[in-house]
Length: 405
Image (cartoon, rainbow, N blue to C red; front, side, top):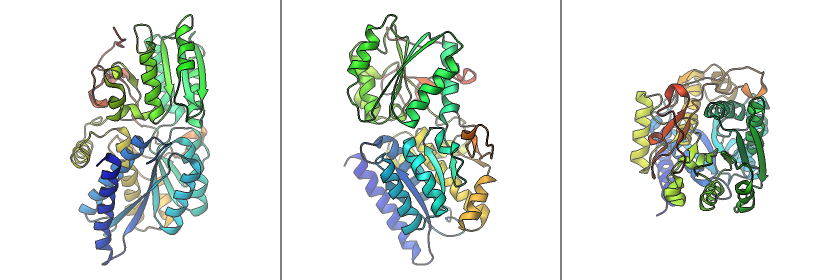
């Protein structure tokens, strides 16, 4: 049984078990949205969903929320805005969920924001990094991962410190992809570094023309930023390796998409994944708290794979909603929304809270202390937690970027 079928069965069993308790009292419903089929980033979507499942099972094992069992209902968005809108509408209106969490692909998160407002349903956004998600300043929308302007300004600080001079960015033509280009370009404009950028449709799977152009460039870039999500990110990384472009003695490669955090990365890359650089918004065990340890253990035991930042977001999203419902003492939408504004909860990645700051616009109801790392794999089949930490400097495990010998 493949992972998707296995997890679909797991989710069905979990919901069936919950349904048995509903005969005594109504369950509190929490909705999840995630890309669980192409063209979305399926591995990312599955990790989000799996983290949600761990959270709901933990809640029910401890008496549920407000003494009632919790039911998780997850809808597939396929990473397509129209499907995301339809999924959110179903959850909010037909299923009457208290709130929704998850999603990946910024275009989906941005599209469902207005639906959250129209239906008065809180949305705790997971793996969506475009500034526009929170910059729209929709009262019902909160975010527990980074914004582009937050994460890539940190990544740009690492680029400056590392001394890269010729940076090439290949990104998808989405809000997130354009954001990568904009933030890197803005933060590096006074450093003397040259930034060249290319964009392509999310569905592009052959990057040979752009990669050959970079290989023939004089000077050749010393850093390539791969701004794609899903399986096409892995295809780009594989093609860059096969062309002898990166990672190479001359050129490092920085993968901005979350798919490099999944075991499937190694299925595609094999030894070619060595020296690839990633940018997770969290690492299991950092901070090393009882909750981060217990979540990692529960996730590994249930799904036979290590947890990563995306799975942690799925877990934290459900738990943030649960904490807000408990604090409100009711499932009333307005009360839960207000409780989220006043929330301070120690999650798997740190203390989550949602400032009401409106300048810059993206900071509104954006958790500002998401842990941001730059990591580099040094051996095949490493997990992100086993990779070398290059940044932040205070937590670095090495001060050297390894280029392919």
